[in-house]
Amino acid sequence: DAAGRLVPELANLLPEAKVVTVSQVVETQVGVNRLVNRTSALVVAVLAFAGGAGLASTMAMNVRERRREIGTLMALGAPPRFISGLFLLKAILLAAAGSAVGCLIGAVLALSVGPQWAGVEVQLLPPLFLIAVAGAFALAMLSALWPARMAAKVDPCICFREI
Image (cartoon, rainbow, N blue to C red; front, side):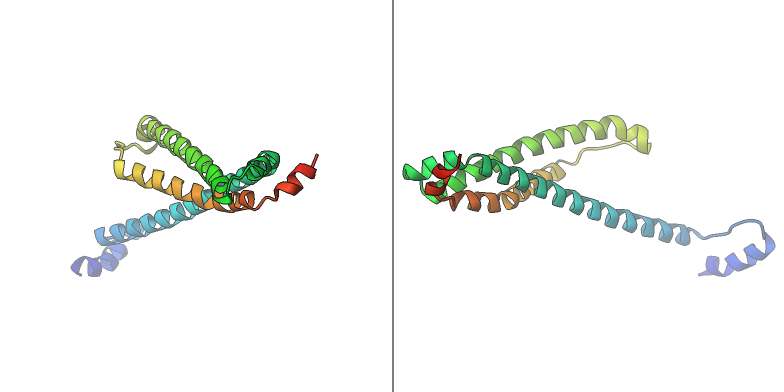
C-alpha cells in the first residue's frame, strides 16, 4: 500500500521515467499468462476440430470406396456390428500411430528448438503424453462413429448394382 502511494510522487519527481510497483508487474504478467492460456485452448480446439473433420472425411471416403467389399461381407452374413467394428478398429490404429508419431515429433522439437526459441530449459511432462494419446483416441472414435455407422447401413443389393 505504501508503494502504491509513492508511485504518483515518484512520477511527479521523475516525469520522464515510468514508475511501477512489483505488484503491477506481477498483475500484468498474470494477465498475459491468462491470455496465452485462452489463446492456446482456442488453437487446440480449432486443431482438434480440423483433425476430427479430416479423419471423418477420410473414413467416409474409405467407406464409399469399399462399398462392394462391405456389401460382399454383409451378403456373406457379416452383421452390421462387425462392419462398423472394422472401421472403428481402423480409426484406433490411425489414432495409435498418429498420437505416437505426434508425441515423438513434439518431444524432439520441444527439446531441440524450445531452449533456443524460448531461452528456457524444456522438460518433458509424461502425464501430458498420456492426455494427448487419450485425446487422440477419443477424437478418432468420435470422428469415425458416423462413417462406421454409414458402413453398417450399406445395402448389399445396391452395392452389387453399382459399377
